[in-house]
Length: 473
Ligand code: DMJ
Image (cartoon, rainbow, N blue to C red):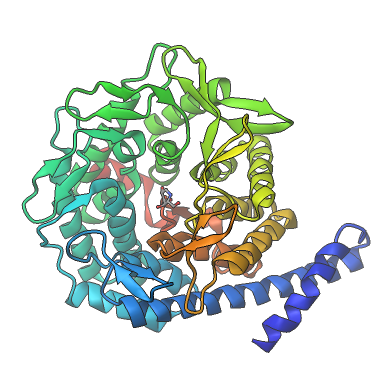
């Protein structure tokens, strides 16, 4: 810890020194110093991850979520599904916390049983449990983990037996009975990656085909001007809400269009992504007070309906950058950075025209950190390293507890809320760590596609020549 303390004293000095340095010698010296600082931050993030993991083990082992203030736990359902550890695995593994990761793997293969009489939210368990197990399989190469992933997916599959192919909201993991007629677009169309990866490894196209049918069911119900709404009835295929946006409730539908094209080479999805992005930029994007925002419009008329955005939308600079739209990615990330700094930490929802917070919670969410990581990886511009360093300092200042980290009830008062969501392990800590250790080149973003819960999948594992037989593309 001494090293961390010493280096943290150097950090402001080093970053302050960056711009005036213009000779090659000084530039190289500066780069070395920046790398040294980043190394220290990576060590600190790893240390804090281990501290939080130890707290989970001490107070919540076997359960879904740690409650860091009361030092207890909570489960999503009447029985636990072990969501925090499954979500944490790929982060612990990447940080070199191999013993901790191995312990999770052994629990998954030897103890965990998904034959539970409970109704699980299909979207949430897909990105966290199925996504987490598939990443665990890739890193551990343990075939029993793949069996567990397949077992879990088979329990999810009955949800897709609807007249539209859009999955119901809930599915009972034991009986396969599905319920919940209305889903949002993210809940309808965030399955392509996990189910495509499962199809690839099991050589059973049915998973990818079900996911693709659900995504196309959304796309095929676009309006005359090409936009989609945000809530739909899975039985009738009728829009329940006609508001079009990229915010919470829609976000990862768009993310998966592009990432599935990237990982599997599914050209149909690449085409839909390109078309969708054109419409998003045409109808949703707007300049306000010299900043770029993406608001809400009516899917049928294109008329603006609201300027409320959510912190989830900060995923968009990452996907813009990944798909080659760097100018907009940079501008949008600057907007999010401004909002974070306005409050000291970002609020869950904000009205950019009324200039006020509409929902003041911050739940340790990763999106702005994810986008800073993508931009840093893709540009090597230390502006984004500094952004993530700033967000890390804010989270330490406001969210750190004596045992782990916790959510904020209100970013205007910084009152804490007793909850450490599972994505804090899966995403937030991972993106910080990958940013700070980026220069070590031990994880190159261009070699991976990450699901929306930040579980990484190696591109070279997926051979394009195999896609026809394994995924049915
Ligand atoms: C994560 O569970 C996923 O990233 C999801 O797509 C939406 N955002 C949450 C964390 O904020």
